[in-house]
Image 1 (cartoon, rainbow, N blue to C red):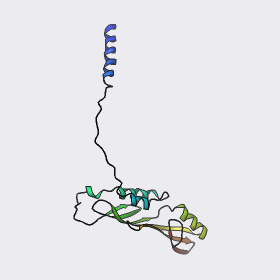
Image 2 (image 1 turned 120 degrees about the vertical axis):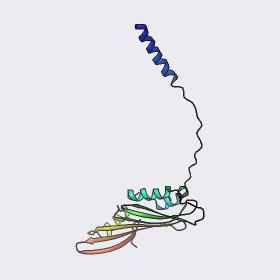
Image 3 (image 1 turned 180 degrees about the vertical axis):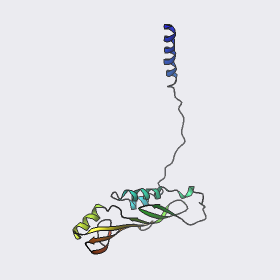
Image 4 (image 1 turned 45 degrees about the vertical axis):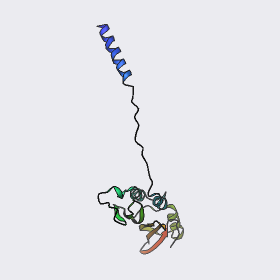
Length: 168
């Protein structure tokens, strides 16, 4: 009985030794291309709200050339992206490159520069609502504007600012 248990133990240990041998396989080459890096560089804002960053990355990563409706005959493709906080309408060329976008987000977190400029100029006012708009074109870059509605008691005021905290 003792020999039987010892032989099972030896067989069990030797079978594990053979299981450690692995085959080396060559994998196919993967090419990563950044087609819409210009769009991301222009619209990227480290202080932008998370929903804004998330949707902008989805727009940049979208590949129109892999969709069923894709044909080389069209000049551009218009695609709309929606989330509860906002939307982006993007135009892609036949190669999948972003030509232009129109973006609108409601009631998002304001960047530090905008908040500080508001506090300096309007210390007793509160932000009732805000709209963040971005227009991007390949040639002109991105234009970012915050449209704010301020309240102070029963008084209301509407103002526009850029992302650097400058009043327009």
